[in-house]
Picture 1 (cartoon, helix red, strand yellow):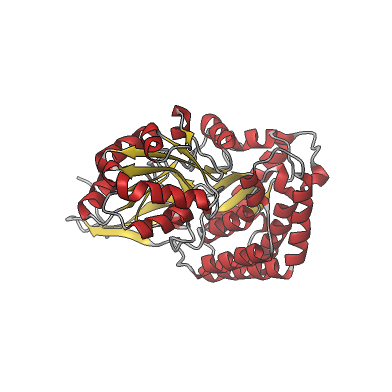
Picture 2 (cartoon, rainbow, N blue to C red):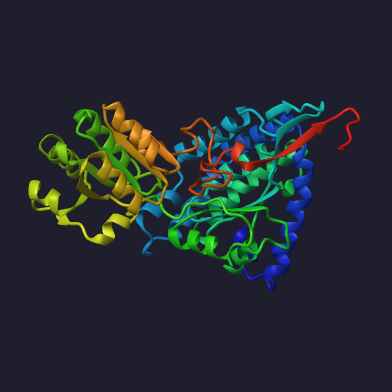
Length: 427
């Protein structure tokens, strides 16, 4: 259990040992058979279901620890497990097992005039470090995804989820043993000392190949600022919905309430609603009415207040705030051009949606906005690896190098070139 060794005298020694074990495990994982990996994954899912009562008991202890604290409701929701969520966790692992094995997949192949045959094939990244807060399910999702892609993984959970994560991790190790794969392929850092995070960000003496943070803005900012290894991350989910004058009003109502209120604490929750100025008389008031009726606080621009008085005025800060709560900022914009300008100014390049029936508007939205995920006539809460058919995700990446959007098994691989000849020499 994490709390049994929380007073380790030398964090660097402990963490470097974890790194060495992960690096040693990564090599056989890189060429492990698909059958072996799938056997391990299915055994992990079986173990989670068999130990559901224990996992929920440990989660109840974690939840007891945060009672009376100032932790946001959204974080408590992420921390909370129940029968359904544990079952979904196991089902998610089975879904990953059912995915095609990316390792060794030939992405491209071509022949050169000199007879050389060249192919680009997927290969594991190596060792992945995952630093997360509040979400014990990340233990299962990240462990399973990394394994399927042939990577070893070092997991560092937040102190608030330490018992839940440890119970889930024990199931992951059980699955590895069942398939005769290295048990150090999935390790959970056994200390809550923040120095362990610093050690991971320094790369554990070259053991870690990439870091993935899953947590609040302060954690992600620290990782992005201090990491000495590549990072797959997004700082915030400042997600926008633009409602064009051509949008179907009933469809827009349903989508907007879902995008904001289904789960307010997820990174794909909508934070800003932009309404076409040409739709003020038809769309604005009904959309605000349905949001308020769903229990959402609306912070309105001056143009919105003229039509729907009595709302809380929006400040400049609101346009760049990830609420992670039942709050949304609403503005009127000058058509698709105004929406694009607003999004380019304030977006975190995570997820944006356009609600419109005009194909020209949709085409401009898809062409001119450079966020990782763009949706047409659909909720921003579909910004999720499972919903994309990836089985699960290790996170959402908003950078422009290598992985972008949901990071699934394919994004957890790199590639190498395999060149086959028959005696060629270079003149």
